[in-house]
Amino acid sequence: KKVGVPKEVFPGEARVAVTPETARKLQKLGFEVLVQSGAGVAASFSDEAYRQAGCQIVSDVRSLWAEADIVLKVRPPERQPELDVHEAELLPEGSTLISFLWPAQNTALVEQLAARKATALAMDSVPRITRAQKMDALSSMANIAGYRAVIEAANHFDRFFTGQITAAGKVPPCKVLVIGAGVAGLSAIGTARGLGAVVRAFDTRPVVKEQVQSMGAEFLELAFEEDGSGTGGYAKVMSKEFIEAEMTLFAQQAQDVDIIITTALIPGKKAPLLITQAMVESMKPGSVVVDMAAEQGGNCEVTRPGEIYQHHGVTIIGLTDLPSRMASQSSQLYGTNLCHLLSDMGGSEHYRVDFEDEVVRGALVTYEGEVTWPAPRPAVP
Ligand code: NAD
Image (cartoon, rainbow, N blue to C red; front, side, top):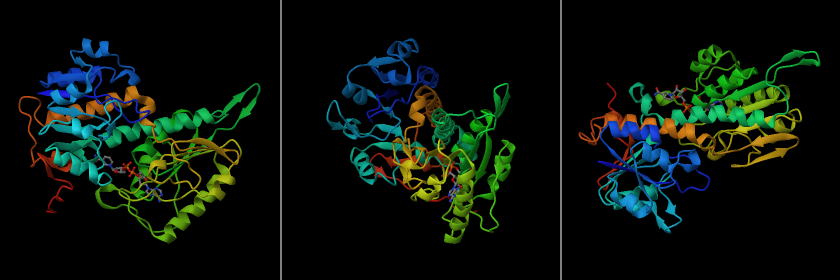
């Protein structure tokens, strides 16, 4: 079978679904790999590097899509600006697309893919079970985003992270508060600790306490009994009283810490508002807030999605493209997630969409034109 790798068309998107290294893995699985000319350039992978990895470079976008049995992408299909046609229309009838799709938010796209008689798998819908960890692109991207959030904060913070005693004077360590200790939050904690900061973290799910502490950070707690663990290990919506108590804690912390990194999300809901304008204004001048929930409505009241700006002497970072800012790394990990999925689906020779496979079924959005999302919940034994 042939896999096709188009250049991403979303403005500023630097990632690519397949790198020369993951292309080699796909070929070991029996696939032929076609790459659109220039697809990897923004992630530092030249056409030549793909050629040396055994890929065929295709300069015409239409033929790339037309020749592929399986199209591998990062972002959901959208209007192709060069051709002024929707990418879904370029997908040949009966072929397969694997990318992030966010079916709950993109119902029109799902219908469009079904109308093309396409089979589509959403990497964002891979169930987060132990066996699927190697295909969990949400986690691999969140890990990168958490790291990059700290790097962006450090870049806008005009002091050391680590404390120092030098001949020129004593430097106190920077204090970082991380709100939400899921995959991205834990990655941010590890990175900030690595740079020598004093790190505190808070999450509504008490189960993460040990993970936070094992990374050398302090786990902040409320004198309040309410477990935020919902289905599938995800967070649930908290009571008004809990959110109020949590915000009282953050109001105190805001006056003490130098950097706040927020990652609080609840699947399928708008992000909870946790850092108010008044809290930002109470922070020391030169402090930094990174709102990793910017795209889902933001955890901080003054966040401007996609922007970095100063509010009351505090830098507010609302970047929504953190993984794309490390495109080479992100593409490598995302590409590896895709290889694992295609390997589990039988490789090229035994490739099949197995409805009995919980991972494939969970990710399957359309199958030969039928809308198959959301997958039925597995029966509770
Ligand atoms: P996420 O990005 O949806 O949310 C980030 C964090 O925000 C979560 O830890 C959540 O508890 C927290 N949060 C929500 N509301 C909050 C509030 N009001 N205040 C403070 N924090 C709040 O989550 P994620 O990182 O994608 O994953 C969360 C969890 O899912 C993981 O920690 C893990 O337990 C589980 N998981 C399991 C697997 C697997 O087994 N394969 C893979 C990935 C994640």
